[in-house]
Image (cartoon, rainbow, N blue to C red; front, side):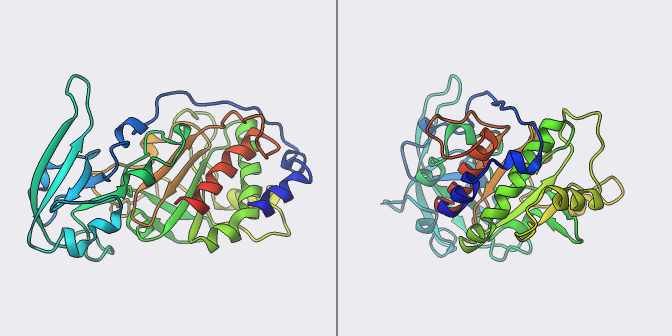
Length: 326
């Protein structure tokens, strides 16, 4: 990040883009607050119940504290060879309070096997998991609606050709930046984030993180139609830094291209588009298929932040998390 901050410190990227910016912060309580994770253990992000007897007793949001009496704290502690061996396994759970229902401590027994019902995911697990301490590393402002969900159903079109679906995202880390162009402010934010991502791309790739810079029409935009492939490429050409490598450009499929059969991920979990409400929306997805960061809008920049604008601060914080904590 020193290289990025140094490059950004030479002059504001705003001056390069020639566009105006204004900060806005999306309010609201965080999804999966720290209080639901402080017990530790392993967080259940998704329960697909395939090839699993007893999994119907486990809910999304439960914390698995022990397996067969041994404490667990990471996804590796519950690897397939242990969790889905075909033999009975006893799990000690903590379930956070919900409305008038107090927190509960439970013991359940499951018998599970790996399955192939989520191709191309081989030997799919019965539960999609993440260490509670890992999930708890995100700041409150990066815990919007999709935070803590499993790899979701989506279909994205590459502006240079090809389609990516939710299952193809499984197994590798990704940074997805969703942006719109309905207002001049949103265009300026997208341009600035584009340039920062160009500067960070090599470091992100070295950390095993792929970028998907994705143009969509957000629900609040009922005036400006989505860009086509040529417009997206032109946006990159106009606002990107020509001396740096291009970043991967994506968009949501139009009505002609859309094929529900390709909008696949973990059926029954969730989809992206219905939960993206404010541009830009940043999603960090880990290799286990868990959304570990979901921020929306531009955050207020602290006085000691090493950035030239709130937009830079917002994307740099996501980049730092992707490099060090994802």
